[in-house]
Length: 93
Image (tube, rainbow, N blue to C red):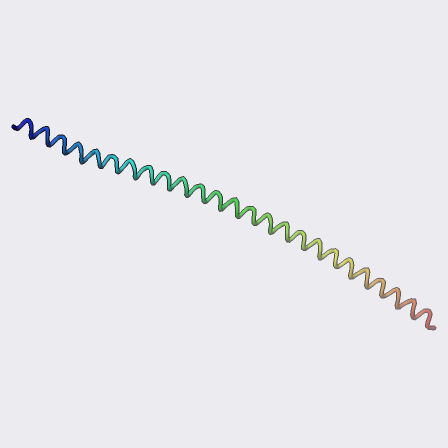
């Protein structure tokens, strides 16, 4: 009788610890998976941030070029206006 009781105790202990082992294994896998997903998301965010910075720099360069072109256009228009007014004054006299 005592032998059967010991076997029963061993089987019940085995069931408890086996369930605990399975739960720990599953939790470790889930935590590992979450950590991997976190790393992947951080990498995507870093890449996205870098892409946005590159786009920003490109847009700034385009705006600076456009500003320089506009300055040149204003200078040429002003120069043309200056020459035109000079000729008008020259022909007026």
